[in-house]
Image 1 (cartoon, rainbow, N blue to C red):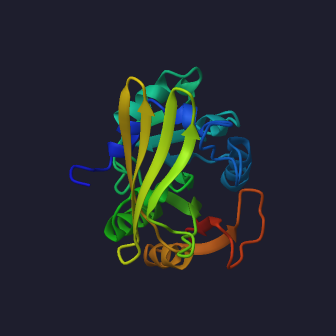
Image 2 (image 1 turned 90 degrees about the vertical axis):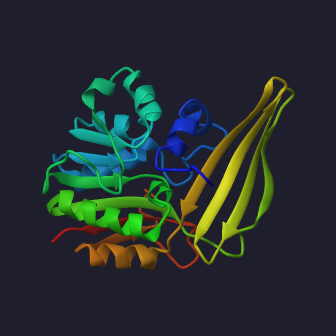
Amino acid sequence: MDGYHESTYGDRYAEVYDDWYSGDGEMALTQFGTPTDVADRVAALAGNGPVLELGVGTGRLAMALADRSLDVTGLDASGAMLDRLRAKPGSERLTLLQGDMAAPPGLADDTFAVVLVGFNTFFNLTTADAQATCMSSVARLLRPGGRLVAEAFVFDPEKAQNGVSVRHVGLDRVLLDVVQVDEGEQAITGQRIEITETGNRLFPYVLRYAAPDQMDAMATAAGLRLEDRWEDWHGTAFHDGSPAHVSVWSKP
């Protein structure tokens, strides 16, 4: 989309993100693990070391990590998302930075025990070059023995369809998804459209998906090695039919 850049998603979704995606919201992200599940897994990997979350958003995962007394830094390209997070009680426990997660600014090399990229957030980097740059940045920021942990969907061409789907129908509100898939570019372009009596709102998103083996290749090029891969945050074995993966790459 013309004019779409690294902060567009966050700036547009900040107002509705917690209502839509937290807990049992209309697009809850708990199918593969709750924030508590994520925090338990990341805390075990981090030990007592510091954690960086890329694409921290409104703090869905970062706040759960802070509850485990971890030193948590959160970075997001969207000032609107960070403003929402800063307004929450307990957010003062976090160090928050605004910047592009492909090239995080103001962070020292060899610092973090874990870098976390939650639910599909890595795919918000809309080009292969940006994703490769992010992997290299993560490798630089991890301390020796540190780990990158990322959660992402596995693209299924049999289920990928252009068109319109219905998210919610109510007496005073309709929420639709309109999606266009470009398999050649590995791109998904979409709009969530909220229709109400008082007017309509558009919530655009652009994703550049990558297969697990493509992410492995990027990680390897950055000097990281695959350590573990599960289907979910509970440690379910990953297999060819898994709809998602939680992958762990380590820095030698």
